[in-house]
Length: 335
Image (tube, rainbow, N blue to C red):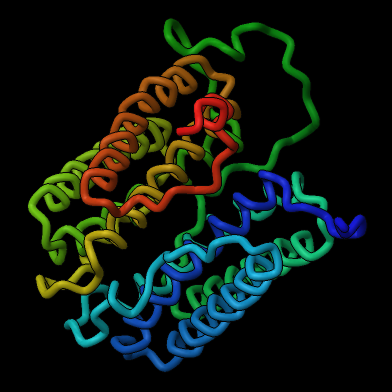
């Protein structure tokens, strides 16, 4: 007899748990390597905390899946990382990287909380949000202490509250352009910063990747990231606003393989998806037409890059399949 008190996982709950499991298995591998190479004794406890948190998350999701007879994802394991490889990134970059990952976790799990209903799944996503905020605090505080935190630009405080009275607020292609709003500046700064971090990460991964196709794919990613950094930096500088620094110098000259090509491709694909989301949010928050159109023109290019990543992963058998709805046609035909 069916248990009437048992609540089945919804598609949203499955996808959130499945994605977080894959991500935490990746985080365990990446930070295992960071822990082996970190030299700064103030950074080390943060890396240890991330590994401990990721392992706890994996155990929670594994227990939920086992209860539901849900296949445990493969994700990533010790086979996907070489902790003995030489140091590839500076300790400062490790902090910046972890801060960026916490932002991605916060975004994904905040969105999941708006869709999930089962109490244990709600508690899990709340846990991830709390941990992501904690990691934000740890990395921000240490970067401020060490003088490596890059703040967004400062602008003057408004004299008074005002309302938009003219359609010229939306223009931007021709004639006199208004100054950027604080919201538009924030998104420009964010997109320079995330692409600069992404370029440094991809540079290190490209140096150590083994498959020639993967290397070529990563080289293209470096070029795209540099292009986006230059576009958004130029826009800020033309408005007499500072642009964030690049992090190319945070990558060493090591070429010894660190991560499996499978892990590399998944990680870069996740960052591409986050980049598309950033562009979409920036476009929605930028009423000046020329700026919104600039974001819109870049989304197809990065989307094509994401598709090429998926095709490359499928070709090599690296793309783990997310939970899917039943195919009724196949069931009816008995295929």
